[in-house]
Length: 385
Image 1 (tube, helix red, strand yellow):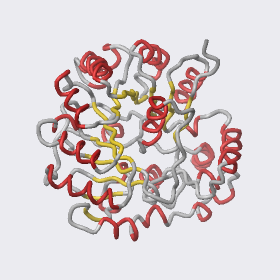
Image 2 (cartoon, rainbow, N blue to C red; image 1 turned 120 degrees about the vertical axis):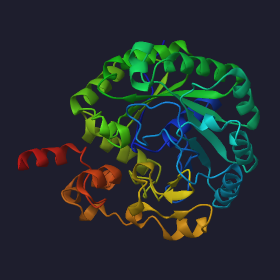
Image 3 (tube, rainbow, N blue to C red; image 1 turned 90 degrees about the horizontal axis):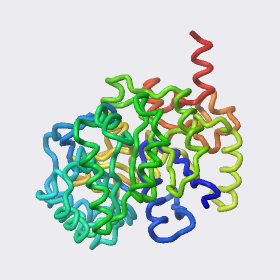
């Protein structure tokens, strides 16, 4: 009998570390994910290519065609050496669709990362996976994989991700499990699929997958172009639905924090937990503080939602990556919530830190602005209209 569903609240809408740690903990028999310091580099996300065989309606990267000047396998091996020297712990491989490179260096990249002692996770749509290449990924040392599904059946998923993508993803999930690669699932919640989250949990149970991440669609890339923002009402409905089910699947809620009905109580408990762990350097946003992103041409950014010239930090292949980490990311590190109104007087400011700078920049043109998802900010905006 399941007494209580394990639900993890992930603060950052971009970081993969939440689901990586929850899945690793569940596979290794841990009671809870380990704490990682905010004072060192925990994880680096690598976009190996912008090429993708799907054109999902909500893709924040608007993936499809490769960037000009995308790096080759030898370039990535050299960058991995640099990441090892920086004592990075986790590497997350993304596209586009990274398995498009399975015959063009992906296996060498994974194998080299493992030789360097890195923990390697990968995201995939699963449509190109068969038993042969899944075994190759296993032999290369891939620690875990997250497969994207945006519906509990083809009727819901394929409208969002493309015809035939559901059945191919299910095949990939089963194959990954058969060859012994740890699998989690991700489900980006948009208005079209918000009513099917319970059905998705039930599907995850049937697939015997231990972790399912629900990601609130972020208004970037094609999600912005297609107007696929999730209303607060729908977000609260999703949370309510998930809170009332009982399942052995561990659920990660990514980007839903501001829609919690008991937000102040959650912050009170979070503060108590951080105090008990003697954590005094907590920040909602890990960009440039405990993680960064490398795009497929080698360019370095603090956050994958802000990969533009304003936030360019240098190139991981050509430049001194240690110097970039030491001296860069000032847009993120220099953000002072105490100087951002009305955050400066908010009782949750010491934990929220004005929340997501990517959303703030997109809404107000500056990272030194409040998060537009914040209910206090929304109320002020409504009053000013």
